[in-house]
Image 1 (cartoon, each protein chain N blue to C red):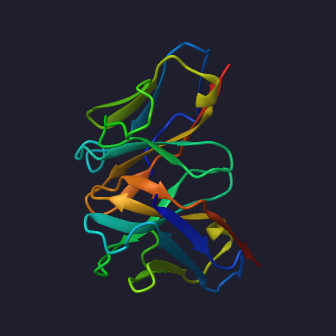
Image 2: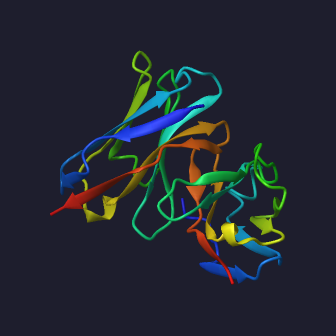
Length: 119
Length: 109
């Protein structure tokens, strides 16, 4: 059974860079036809797609976050990572890593990790 | 890209049917048959319930069904049960990204 687990700091200072890593187990991140991505959910609000990456390194980002987001993949470790720069309180959210199919369907989710931006 | 539009809340009694709408534009819902629906219980990760407009993953009850007309997709839950009480989120492919709705809270009365 595929499992995804987020890791990283739960508290980030405003204007700094949020960094999270997702470790994939029970399957290979190099599988064809799947993308690996990040989705966030501010407290009490809806879901927001941040971006996705293919194992080859091709990336796709939410246009509203594109200038601040970098997603990378490390196939040797079966991991992918998120960096979000210049964070503000509006970036406080539960961040989920996930597996996407072609067309954006998200079929596996990590449990999520709360990241709070402090001033 | 703008978020898809969902009603903030819907409610129904056990055994009844409810429908949740998800309205987008001709650039997302109206152009692609890549609409998904997710169920989320409090404090849990979302769970895929419907993909590609009307397909159910293995293990999802056939009480859940999806459809689309023009720029609006819909999720119907028949024979409401107490465990269906949750938040429901829709999403659509846009050609180069994915956009979600604001989420709908389903209350089973």
